Length: 98
Image 1 (cartoon, rainbow, N blue to C red):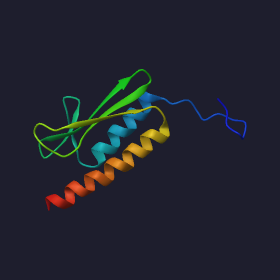
Image 2: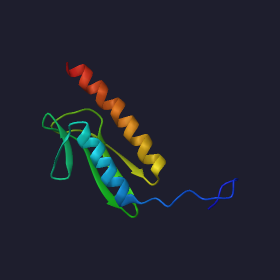
Image 3: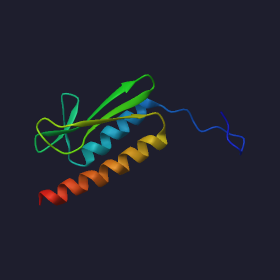
Image 4: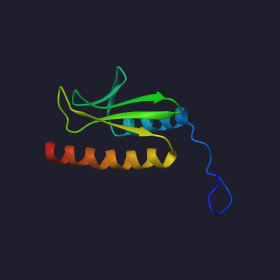
């Protein structure tokens, strides 16, 4: 599918995007354990590959038994948006914990 300029965006490589997203989460000092990323013992994010996309489960608030929201990341733009949104959310949790 090409846009008005006559070229298509590069194909989305979900496996490479997943590795990059995991690296970002580890850089934020989250601990990866059993497929989940945790902060202070509470799960925050679960990432899985699903039909050429990334299924991202994120908690609404840190808790031992959290309520999850699910997003399907199908493009590099979706991954960038999710990463920035999660960073802002995590910063609010970190600030309220201090």
